[in-house]
Amino acid sequence: MPYKTQTGQALNFGAMERQLLAWFRRNMRPLPWRGHYSPYGVWISEIMLQQTQMERGVSFYLAWMQRFPDLASLARAQEEEVLKAWEGLGYYSRARNILKAARIIMERHHGVFPSSLEEIRALPGVGPYTAAAIASIAFEEDVACIDANVERVVSRLAALDLCVRERAGREAVAELAGAFLQRGCGRDHNQAMMELGALVCGKNPDCPACPLRDYCLAHKRNTVHLRPVLPQRQERIPISVASGVLVHNSRIYVQKRLPKDVWGGLWEFPGGGMEENEQPEATVVREFFEETGFRVQVVDKLALIRHSYTKYHITLHCFALELASASGECDFPAPPHLCEASEFRWLTLEELADYAMPSAHRKLANMLTLANGRLYTTSSGGLPKLPLA
Ligand code: SF4
Image 1 (tube, protein in one colour):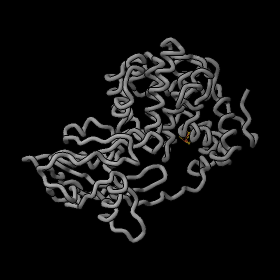
Image 2 (cartoon, rainbow, N blue to C red):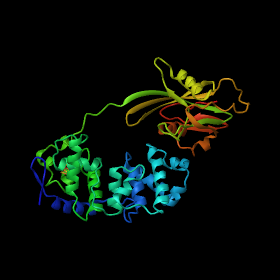
Image 3 (cartoon, rainbow, N blue to C red):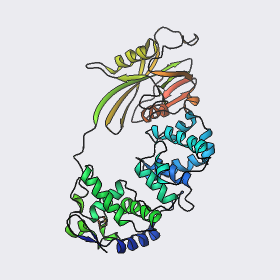
Image 4 (cartoon, rainbow, N blue to C red):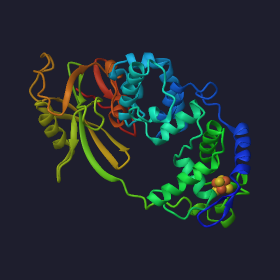
């Protein structure tokens, strides 16, 4: 019985499913979690692939599985180790939730990954999409997954004329996605839809290569580029920030962000937002004093790093710093007065590599190098090599 869209158009989902699954069998990528579909592997892959490109996700997944091959090894890990393994993927609450969930599974589910949609959904960091993905791909439940790929594909198949970020549009997408999924096909259907959205029905769809082109209403009506209907894109807010690398006795000062903060638990070079009419050199000196009690002075400008996050476009002015009143021979200064951090360390450059940092700070850390007992920045973005202190 063909499915009727809201505008009365018929969609033969049964025939479409056969085409889709046949295409998937011929075109599926050999991803490392495919094949035996362990719940642990499917879960980790799904969390990692949120906001992450496939190629990058695969390399992180492989490294993760080397380090934490199963739930038990993950549940035993320290948060610091987990954050380090996650470094570069961003959205670090995902890593903290993975660790919490692994411990819950070990304690409450006796080490066995829960199989019902409700129990999976109850795990920290698991939303409706991830729960549906695990239930269907790992446990073969017939529940439709709706991610951005699926949203795009079904919107085009039905030529949906509703904004998919608004309630009516979300409900219509959910109804279409559920109606398309045929009984007993949950695992392959969901993967096939996501694969089709990623490989064929993307931003610039390749309709001639699509197994569903004969059924697709947007294709028939020549409205493919108008679907899905999305809200107007919001501009990212620009923010200017200054941070400093304080070096003393060939060691670098870093501090750990408070758990409640964005990037909580990650290590950083202190700094902060520039006030109106403030020069970045003044910002870094002021911020350092406010955050640590250290009086510092700028030795050199190191780099200008631009980095975009979901809502913000950050320009990070980076400086080499030294203590304002210390000779190079003296011991380390008194401990800092931390007010925006939970811990501090004086690290060698080699040790810095083992500490998880937000992306922009990691970029800066990766530019630093040590030669003849002195620190330099590597020439990155056309910057000259500069002695630090
Ligand atoms: S025909 Fe084109 S727009 Fe329609 S589902 Fe296929 S790739 Fe997407």
